[in-house]
Amino acid sequence: MMNHKLSFTQAKQIAIVDYLAGLGFDAAKVRGDDHWYHSPFRDERTPSFKVNRKRNVWYDHGTGEGGTILDLGAKLNQCTLSEFLEKLSAENYDFSFHRQPNTHKPENRLEVLAVNEISSPDLLYYLRTRGISKNLVRTYCKEVDFRIGERGYKAIGFPNQSNAYELRNSWFKGSSSPKDISLINNNSCSISVLEGFIDFLSLMQLDHKETRDLIHGNDFLILNSLSLLGRSIPLLQSYKTVNIFLDNDLAAKEAKHHLSGIHFYDASLLYNDFKDLNEYLIAMQKLKEDQIPQMKSKRMRR
Image (cartoon, rainbow, N blue to C red):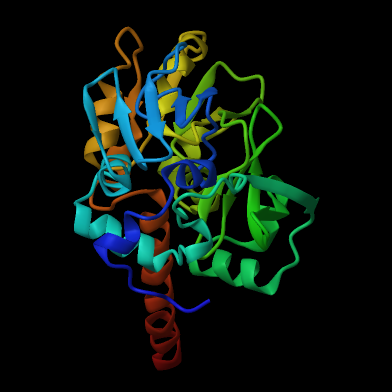
């Protein structure tokens, strides 16, 4: 698919319920045109986040905020409206997602069709661009065929605790339902916490003594969404040692404030000059590649 630069008017026609479905959020209940969700911004038992499908607007009763898909996307991605518009365009949201006035078509829900070992050349190439080896990803991930509406796609799938998958490829970031955490249990009294599975794979890929020593033998909690951190606190309280590998951004900084009562080591200090673990991994690999010609040159001069 070719990139199509969306205008603000075009972007506002993308159905919010379809956008949320693509991110793995399903409505807890539907009353006419009103779709009620558990808020994507916090942990809650009673759904308080409403989307009116007819008007294509949202309202969060917990905070009093609301607006169009642009306001929602900007808040979810911690960016400006213009930046989110660029993100929508770059991720190839096509007009099969767009709201059609005065129609009652079924919702474009994400449906998993098949789960296999990873073999797609496109997915393997995407992994190489992220600095992750195919042997590592095959240990933890699968190749997932899925569809949204009538269109079929492939993605790298990382399983969660509810037998659903976090899904990634070069243009898509979403999940099947239900959204949940992923837990890798090594029967340890120490646990390392990461935002997403690309961060986890990056941590496993890093050839860095300090991180290797820190995570050796650990259990791993992959949140798959910062909004799931709150419900994970009882789990974290059961561990003697907690290492936090979150992104270096405002959302992660605010999330750490909710870890009251949990003594943790903030491992993000190890990659403080980078946005996240994957950006750090790629930078370290590039540095190593740049050093190899210099080392060969020194040996030749001896």
